[in-house]
Amino acid sequence: MGQFHFFAPSHEQVPVETLASAYLAGMEGIPWRSANRWNHPEGSSPVAFSLDRSITESGNLNIPWQIPGIGELMLSTASLMETSAPYNLPLELARGVVNRLRNQLADWRMAGLAVPDALASEIRNASQAFVAAITSLPDHASAVAASEKAIRLALQAGEALCLEYTRQALAARHQNAEHLPTLLGCRLGSRPIEGTIVECLTSGFNTAVVPFTWRAIEQNAGKHEWEIFDQQISWCQENGLRVIGGPLLQLDAQHLPDWLYLWEDDFEQVQSYLMQYIGATVSRYRGRVQVWNCAARMNIGGAISLSEEQRLRLMVAAVSELRRNDPQTPIVLSFDQPWAEYLAANDRDLSPLHLADSLVRADLGISGVGIEFNIGYQPAGSAPRELVEYSRQLDRWAVLGLPLIAYISYPSSSDVNTNASRAVRYSSSERTPEAQSEFANKLIPLILAKSFVQGIIWNETSDAEPHEFANAGIIDATGSPKPLLDSLVALRKQHLT
Image (cartoon, rainbow, N blue to C red):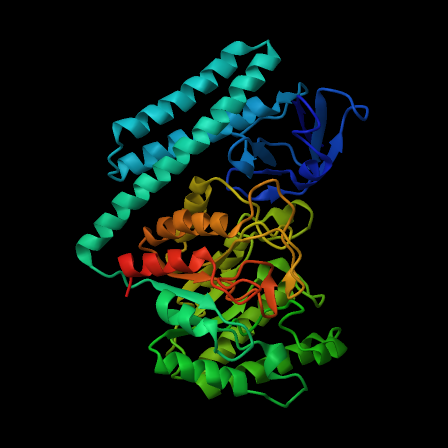
């Protein structure tokens, strides 16, 4: 059995929930299933823990970490080899953060990035702080203090590096086009477009996602209710918004009609009902939808028990049925939790990227791939990460050779929202409307700077209506726009149509 051992100065740095969320991953970032355990008496210091795996090879530890002045982020060590001696966790996290910063700097410099002197100095300071941590050994207290400084400086320098890359890359894109062709949209719910949402859509977006939720359309088998989605489609056409339709197939409780559970043990019948629903929906709205999202989140299972093979068969059948009814409109498939944290606790054969690659290689006629960054909702989403990690993740998916669509959600509050089906995970990080807007102001331009990303979708519209990700809407629970809307309006005016 392969084992990794670590120690940290105190329980405050590695509480119980932190160890439960830690995982080991290989060079491609794919988690291995592991058993995480404490190696010390309760209340003792330093804190010692181990992760046990069934394989023996080098790996990276990923673990939530509290950074003063920044908040909690999922950080990763550099690649570590197995050893019987425990690793100094803060030191190894510092090594990982500084290593990724320097590698990203080298990659972007090779691509033509001009690095300002002030930024180069920030990166040197982070590297020097890590050297100070290494040379402090065997004084572990001094090494930990220097490591924490190195982590903080490297994260700040990494953010500055991403912002500089964004500035230069967007300037280069604008040399070819005053207005970029990227879609900027938000996901509508299952209610008519009216009230404050009208102003949000017309000012902030050039695209809307009309969900065509199976549960809303076919509450009773064979009886379709189209009124809400007819209104949404007509409104988008009248106001010049492009439409992404779907996902048509999504296996969670918010999308599946209740009556389908009667057939949960009959895969062929489930597939038959699904094909009827897709055929009816696509036939009705063919020519009024610019992009079809055929299936979403099939990499993470769902509310009915299906094997990986059955989920794959459903996706293939869904694409075929959609294409049979609409041979022209582009089709995308989207995937949630791109870092695949769930693999650390589940036996699955394929990571999200490998599943997407298999489907692309199957030559089904897929035109693009969607990636969901639902940040702060783990285990039903992804953990917050340093800004450079979002860039690295998108670059991994770019190897598929297809246009990407990024779906994003981020909470403006940690409060309970009874209108939401997925709660915000507790975090010491700031959860405010201003922090939500700041997150969007950093991440969305970074994504926009990448020409292979052709769509950016905010995953929630309103906290005041039934929705999925708590407090992630552009409109708050009282019906008022959040600062996020102003950020999106400004981004659209500066860069898009």
